[in-house]
Length: 137
Image 1: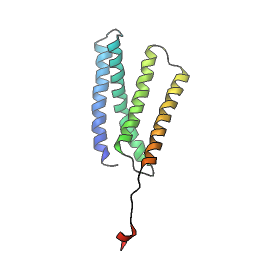
Image 2: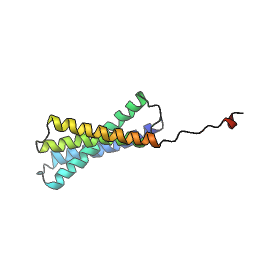
Image 3: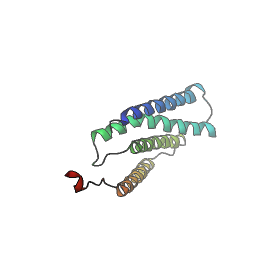
Image 4: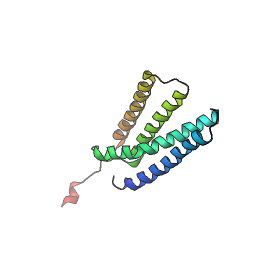
């Protein structure tokens, strides 16, 4: 998992620069009315910004609390993407004043359940390495 660090940090910096920079331009400089394309731009840039921010955190958590089987880089990216989608969706819903405690908890529960079932499927499809006794002699 050590070799994932450089890839993770490069991706994280690119996503953060594009996401947070784009959001800054969209909100502070353009000051556009909330038209459809501006809201979609806000949503996409929010996902990029929050995913880039969550990527090093997810990487660190997997380094700090390792699983019994080594994880692949797609798991780290997918879990950071869940964090980005969660935060951007809550921000999107807040624009329409639709966020309640039940929405926050329900969305988090649904994303945790989706990740749990995806990881369960990955573990079930994992093929352990075969070590034969003939090679030991």
